Image (cartoon, rainbow, N blue to C red):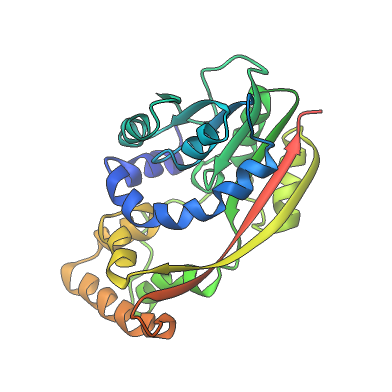
Length: 269
């Protein structure tokens, strides 16, 4: 396991409930479109990779699919298994999945490619477990980030909180452009055919305290950076967050946060 993947395992360890209450609500938005792109319906054998709290697995079950789901974080596996007892949920991580070649009709990964150290290898593994003519569909965050997505990073920057050297980035040879062209290119390089990509844009409405609770719990890179800061700097990040969040407040006091993601899909043949 490389430094990037090891960091990701630490960043998500034991945080399933905190994620489900915060960023998980955001990531749920793309699930219906993801399953549509993968052709998930009645009788389809589908694998949900990086299931998290089981959001995509649950909707696939409701559509009548035969659902398997995996996640690299044990607390996510436990939560998804409770939430979706109809699905076969187990612990596994990319790029090595415990399934035979061509075992599934469809494979989906909702905001998972963002969190692996070797994205090309991860997509090749998704292709491997999809059968002849099978569909693979993934979502990632686009770059540059939409204003709502950038809010927490702006608060860190405004507080003078530098990214610690201990927070790894992808190796240059493993990175790719977070654009429609970049994602379709990655899908094609993984051996998939007919790759397509769509940009998804929406406003995620969240209570300011709920949105802050994600990084406050140490979730993802922004949360790990926040947890690495001295208390006075962390307090300044919170103050800057409150100031900057005013740009997105609605009349009800909630935040309306613009987000943009990429949905890419392709087939094995």
